[in-house]
Image (cartoon, rainbow, N blue to C red):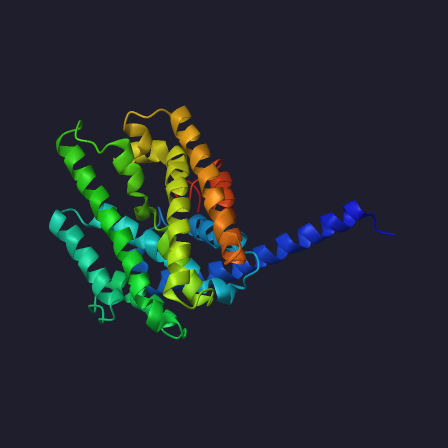
Length: 302
């Protein structure tokens, strides 16, 4: 007779095995995306380890989903990675950064991308997939709004970095930096996922989830900064620890934000039980992952 402890261990292992198999299928899809748009994904930093980490994170945050269910989320995460690298490394002037943002927003609105605009073409693939969902016509505006919020935050950070390069003392305040967390990209990815999986069917429902997701995203931004400080320092990127805030203060802020976010998610739970669990798992998985590793590759392992 199987003991309860052994039965629980077998069930847990089976669940984890299924999630890992979903992640493996998702990684194959991400590799196909990289092959389709090789200019978007230099290796390093966007290497096989990063693709695996993106696929695993998405699968474990939503363990009830199949690889097909997660395709939009994983591709949107990969697109955010490409866009982030492009803004940081390719757009070397304010005009180039603004042009990149404008081109992406044009594609999101439904315009065809330019022939050699791989970032726009990949975004158009995601938009075309979402357009097959019945609610996308009504939710398209919110999807665009969150993309604009993310890109505006990326552009704002580009401007801060440019100002700092000219004058090292020209830095945003810690509060302004924390308020710019939408550049992390999680909320736009979440919105894309919820539309793709038909988790919501009205703008009112999606707007409520967006409010909760933005609160989660501010936590993720700070957790990411603790993990990526040395890389950011070497790359010249901004980080909360460069703004006169010490690590202990950031950890206290993260704890306070998590408590506040859980209270907010308690109010969301009754109307959106699975999405509330999704957001709680997003906090837990990301905080634990960044406690050990980082998504970006450095070329040491391939």
